[in-house]
Picture (cartoon, one colour):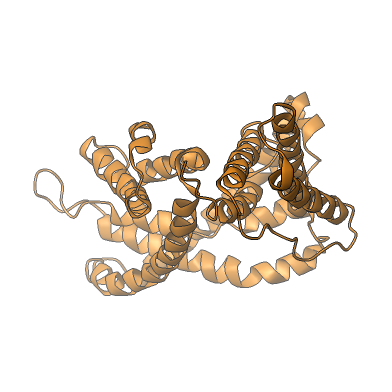
Length: 336
């Protein structure tokens, strides 16, 4: 929260991207110093920062940050299994007093519990809100039970589970070995590997067996959001014309671009084959035209954020659209 308030003073893209790493580490270590969960603190800071990112980061920072984080996440996921492999011999050496059969039995029980509890929980999680809230019944379609089954089966464990286990200290404050640390690590490793092998390898077959129809809801949601954002841009553009803030060739070029894009989006929403690559504006020929584009891009992003805030679209659709807006905004750098 403090970072969100201070972020407006950062204006260098490299510093902005680096700061997203620092805020996570700071959240973790501050929480640990307060004897709270550093893992949950890092997750919470990421959620909060992600919510405000459309308003905080510049287009250049978002484009660079997306590339950096996508690579970093791939690296972290790969490093997880290296850490597991490196830790297993040490952990097993600390469990010499336990028969291997007993360890595997405990691991199987916990793995089964993790899988079953999630499958059992997703059903009330999917249907109870509809039973108690008229707003949910009106705004959301009734979930297909087959889709709920698939969601329940996708409870694979990974980064967070491993981070929570590895965050346990080696020793207590009195200098004694942390009780059952090796056992907790072993069982965590077993759950991670077990869910990946059991659920991960069987997920494709389960989806095929359920006979789920192709889900086009997210695509329709994204197209509808693009249309609403573009319509809002057209409204503001016409207001600018009425106030004498833009006219002539600049107005015609900007208006033509958004009209073409709106027509294409509406055609795609109606499941007709439209233009595959919508024409984008060419060279921005004047500072006045740049300022028009700059203002309208801000309007489009504001409309998008408002739709996300009111629950009309989800994060996935928002980020897909936001990336297109960022690519356009990155080409617009008014100097006056």
